[in-house]
Amino acid sequence: MSVIKGIKGVKDLLPEETPRWRFIEESARRWATRYGFHEIRIPIFEVTTLFARSIGASTDIVEKEMYTFQDRDGTSLTLRPEGTAGTVRAYVEHNRAAIPVPQKYFYTGPMFRHERPQAGRLRQFHQFGVESYGMADPRADVEVIALLWRILHDLGLPSLTLEINNLGQAADREAYRPILVEYLKEHNAGLCGNCKHRIMANPLRVLDCKVPECRSITEPAPRLSESLSETARSYFAQVLAGLDLIKIPYSLNHRLVRGLDYYNLTTFEVTATNLGAQNAVGAGGRYDGLVETLGGTSTPAVGFAVGLERIAMLLPDSQKSLSPHDKIIYVAGFGTQGSVAGVTALEELRLSGISAVSDFRSTTLKAHLRQADRLSCHFTLILGDDEVTKGVALLRNMESKSQYDVLLSSLSHQIQPLLLPS
RNA sequence: GUGGGUGUAGCUCAGUUGGUUAGAGCGCCGGAUUGUGGAUCCGGAGGUCGCGGGUUCGAAACCCGUCAUCCACCCCA
Image (cartoon, rainbow, N blue to C red; front, side, top):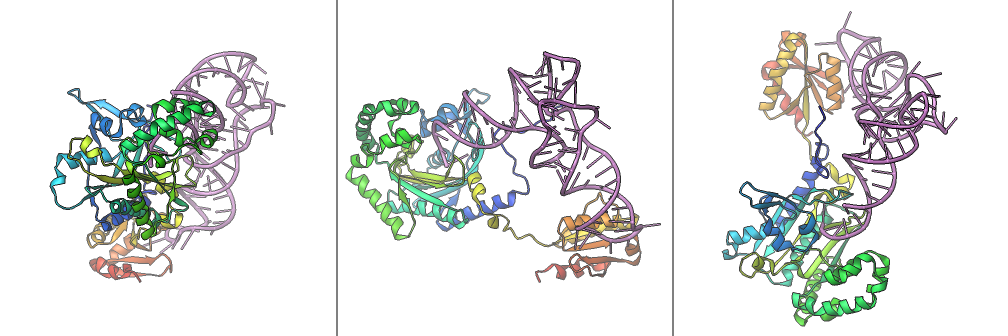
């Protein structure tokens, strides 16, 4: 019999790691709530066309990274590669635009992309994201960026950089595209093979190339910012002013081009050193056209998503185990009568709200005490045949080693006060 | 999809130009202490050397293939 193993790029989160995941998730929830966002829970799979339409048919995600399968009736379904598409779908489907207050949602959960795993990249990974609908106002952008920054900063993540760029409206990019293409064609010879292809396919991505030769070629290239309309420029200026106002530090990056088709105007990304090659912790932007693309009425929107695995990698040790664990009492029942009395003692303690554990493999007091020590229990309740005969149990303080009798008839009553925080 | 690194005990890793019974540390179990944990000492259990083939008198080591994993490219959170 061969052992069945987990799927490549899909990881278990073992009990040792879940406390700090909870810490991250709870922190993100708390901040999002404080900023007026409400949780939405959307399905893990959707019809494939939802993602193809929203993310962009020619993006890498849609072209080669989706987990797609057929439903029994032949409908093509896909495990969600990101959360925005599903959230917009729900927004449109439930006609949330009709509700007369800003619709601000957050979500968290697993996402799926079929890529080769590497540091900070899995096939099932987890994101926390927010979406703010209905406000075509720079302050909405600032609010979302501020929330992103606060979540990450509050977790104590080291050396974060917030980069921001203005992608303009689609018309601005259309105007810029031929200008950039012309420049790139002149310098075609010096570009890497990838970028030579990108000139026609997606010229903006050449700006984002990591190859040093490409970077030095694109450094003096005409910039998108020069082709932007006055409204796009002024909008972006107001976003930056808003960030200045509430003291969110940022740096402008004219090369920041996001990989999803639906972004316009403001785009941003928070990167960290020490993450390996995948250094983006979180990213987002404005996507004013998406709701309409998915059949809703024209609705401006802005949002972001952060990668939980990447946050977990960056989280300092001092932040990892902040969950306050209650005091636990170990019940050492051994011998014929002691074993039986141990079972009832465990249940009685638990019913009265006390965390109680035991290791039923241990048959000797020595073995029990060793387990109590390993479980770092503050107290051990010793229950051997002698104690049962006397109608008592021995309560041992594991640190001071002092121990005394407690009556079995009023066990939890006597133990409860001992477990209160001293 | 492409490239590179690594697969030996539960964990971290040694293992000489190919040579006899594959080791260490930590961990685990037991004893010293017949009902008292952590420290110490003593003892013990635990290995298809990733898998399959090949070369050889002989392979953990060399060759080929394969799988897993990690890292990087592409791209992204």
